[in-house]
Length: 240
Image (cartoon, rainbow, N blue to C red; front, side):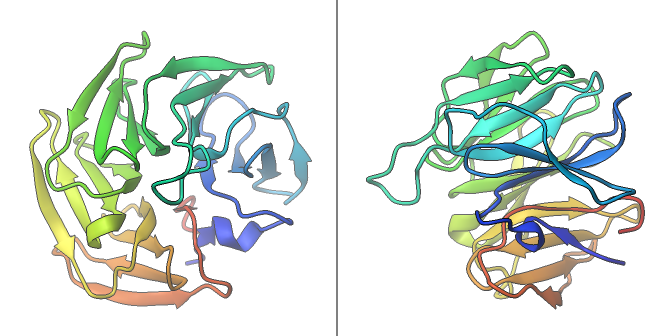
């Protein structure tokens, strides 16, 4: 198995978002720099710029079933003095961009559930927001979260959230009940999270470059170390 990490596709910038397009548009891997969205064709490996410059420090990114891309505005937030991004941009299949929803505090990782709801991490606010397909915004979960980033969602719509600030993963049920799924000394400000077809998780550490493999029972081990450290997001796709 090959891990696709956003740190592996650095092109002059640190890339923070990564998403896999499974809609009717051609399958692609999409990467976000602090200003521009890039697309990498998953079969040919061709890199193209496919959206205009966004006035945002882009963070997490997800693609809905209609091919619309939701790009989180991370802002310049890396410490308490930074600007915390407060919006999500929506990019249409025609690559037209606009602000979809505002009201976040350092919008970082996000993901869709099976009902089309988008869940958005707020790294500067220590909570998860829920946005319905109609754009209705609410606070979904807070308990146990410290600087949340990446979000993975299983087939039962449980959320698994990277809690960077306390080196743990929180499991959050559909009704918002939050509990600790795993906490390990191998986790070091975990950012990205993805899950394979057998329910095994893979997370990327921001501070040491490690990719950590986590079994369904919570057992953790180092899978790989990515050169350069500062890993962003990663994704499991088609046995890679």
